[in-house]
Length: 322
Image 1 (cartoon, rainbow, N blue to C red):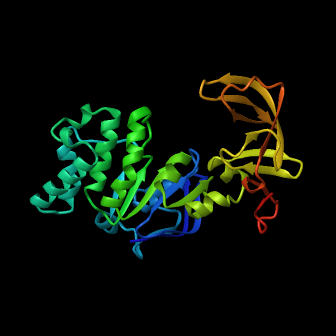
Image 2 (cartoon, rainbow, N blue to C red):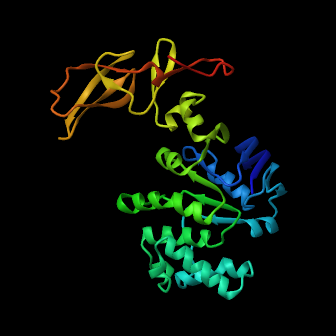
Image 3 (cartoon, rainbow, N blue to C red):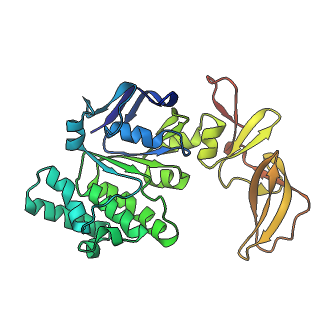
């Protein structure tokens, strides 16, 4: 079931928050909504879920307006901050299934499947308010996935996690979404999460869509410097205007496209070294081979021309590779 946005506008008071003339989230695919804090990502998710009313336009779920009744039938939502009843994990997972009038045996089957897949089956009889941060994230996800809804909305599912808990859930999520969800829209401000979890990416900035499409297309052709930076490119100033260097493309020494790094710090990590500094006011670091001596105050670095793109002022011409 696809989700379509038509002429959607939203404001908080006099402040415009979202303006999306048209956008489609494809059926059966996971789309990562990528943007900085305040870009409108969560607001768009809440509008699709019917938790906010637009100033203009509408969201369509499977071709029908996202009315409260339509949302109850077709949408599962996992909030950024897990909210639980003061009862067991099992009771929290069961509530939405009860509201959808599923028979007891089916409710039990879905709870067991989702809890086992999300790694919280041993916590079903624990009080939900006593879960750790990682356990709460997994229980929150299990509650949404147990619905096996045609549309699943996930708001920053990895927020607040770090270390092993984040790595494990990031590893598990693609398989969970394949097994339990169909069309998934996932909000994140993290490039790694967007690229690992999304089939498609939508980049939002200040309430407007800057780029959308299959992730490899969006990544290879960011339309502007801000989008490139969100996708992990190093954006540098040059005589011809801003240029973006693909992640990991900068290497020490001469090459097809060269820059001079003003070195501010040199760190030997044992397995490799890094020179930290700036190019034209942009802070960055360049990886050096293990055992490299400290560089001087300036270090020549370069990248292949295919990994460097410049941005023409004309929106019609778009980014150009060097």
